Length: 424
Image 1: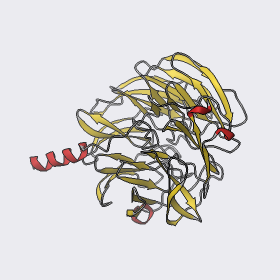
Image 2 (image 1 turned 135 degrees about the vertical axis):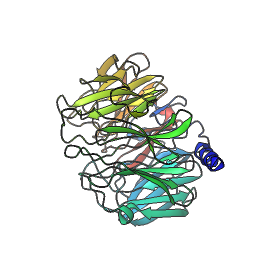
Image 3 (image 1 turned 180 degrees about the vertical axis):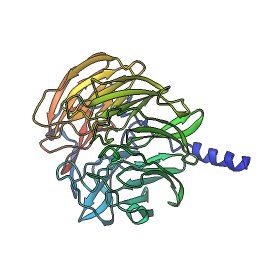
């Protein structure tokens, strides 16, 4: 028994192929925090400054990923779920169609491809609104695929599935939080075989059981663990078997309705900063700091701080050099100390009729934020807020920008742009 446990722990701790400078292997980058410390990226540009732009076969809002100068993204193609691979010059390497797409319920913000793919450098893993989960080799060959709807029933969400898959060790982690049987599950990356499933059902106000956030990997007392936010609960699970390590409630004491978990929390050292509620409605956006080293019910013991005066809606916060940066729904930017929750500084991008639905990223001290109308802002944020540029792409943008390979990738409704560092 001890040998079996040791073997399992070794598999879970097995290192994923190390990303190189310029890689962006998952939605929130190589460290899962939305930031990159190295590389050169543009400061100001126009669409004409693009090194290249590629017309995409369908409208998708998922964020591209990058591995060793190759770009991978999910996209509808001829009415099917598909994964597209491009080289560093934007040339198509392959396009794999997986089966019929499921049309989005939200006509402007949704698509069949909301969730972003993830790679460990040995395979590419993607999830679609249809319920399809696929594993591909790096050359596009199908390793395995499965149908979550066929296996577990329909996913009952108000809007469109958006939780991206996550990798830890030899496991692919899928979170399914909806108005139905909710769970987090682990599947073998090589075979697709289910390794474990942990149910996650709570009685909550209307829509609050709908979850669009992505699982987070973290280290719990020397062992791989998974953090989940949704249904007014933060829960930590062992990566070995999905067992509950601890849970934290108390995020919605007034029982406010229509608080789906959209933005994903962000971790700094032993603290996780949790965005609660929604910033698109007055006085409904909150922020909590929860310590990660608890056990059992930590509702009363591990909440380090909370704020009821600031928060986000859809945009996941960024961690950069020990600070947390919030992009508010109408363009406010708030720099927060994760230890105390106090504001370090606050500023804002110029306002317009459009709002921010994509998540910001930071590269080399510059924060990039894409507004829905296609305007991408660049602001220096190391010590204070300095607006550097306002760059109109001319196409609606919901996907998050990607700083990788000394260029900024911007996905619009119709194109993928590569903006080189020299554009500055």
